[in-house]
Length: 339
Ligand code: UDP
Ligand code: MN
Image (tube, rainbow, N blue to C red; front, side):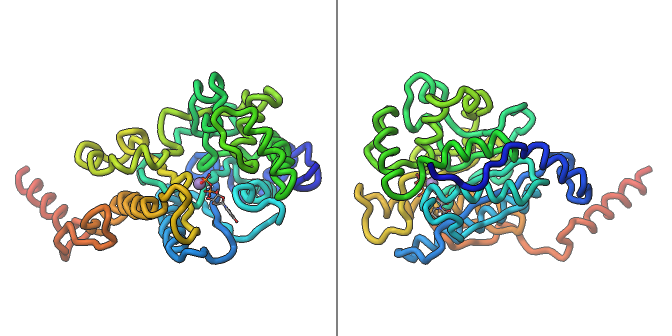
């Protein structure tokens, strides 16, 4: 079967040895295990220029989130293995990233069609213990109902360790373009509930391995459902205005979704998608971007005039005392005089 590369079976000790030899490459940032945010999109231009426009906006959103939270960020537009095209491109990429960043503990994959919509929320890493894969999903949908949407692979964290290399190796044989992918697609459609007939995808492969593969896949996977590590766009985008009126960023859940993921949208496709949904995708991508961008622009004193608008306006008067220092020293002298 297809392989991603030479078998590595002692990665944990290789990593440890390398980190021992390179103490300058800190494995922690401000006391937290180092996390590398990774995303990417296709090497060529989108057939629909609007698709590239939204890839750029979503990329800007990731740059903002990474900057605000001290994450390193890698955006890839190269095809690493030509058999591993489309949604399978993340597999060889994740392997390469792990092997070439031994100082990084967590790799955080985000699809190009997913966007951070809570710019304040941070992953509660302390709760994951020995888990090696953090993925959004629901216990009943996955373990009881065996549904192919029991979890979602649009935004997940995977630990840089042997278990993860083994998982990538176990997923890889389902991915090669052509008959392997077509045959695996048939298997997944047969085994997983409500899966339409189409070629194998990485999400179905993961669900399949967790349900039918070695028990260690389930054992070290943490299904996150307490906040939207992935939020299906149709469930969240229509609530943004109500959330802005009632809540504030920082929750990551229904009150302020952490990630909005445009599953099923085909931004590169020209014309209507089969279900006539692409126009709605673009309208909602713009709204999601502006919802997130307001949280970034706030610091600079601007906001979008409406979620549907790329136009912005000022929300604060400019001042000659931007840092509030004059105001502070005036208060101090008042206090001193009062003593
Ligand atoms: N992708 C990539 N390189 C490619 C094609 C796709 O890195 O050449 C990534 C891209 O980030 C994309 C992801 O694969 O978002 C998964 O595909 P998609 O989002 O279309 O799947 P969906 O979430 O709609 O099931
Ligand atoms: Mn996606």
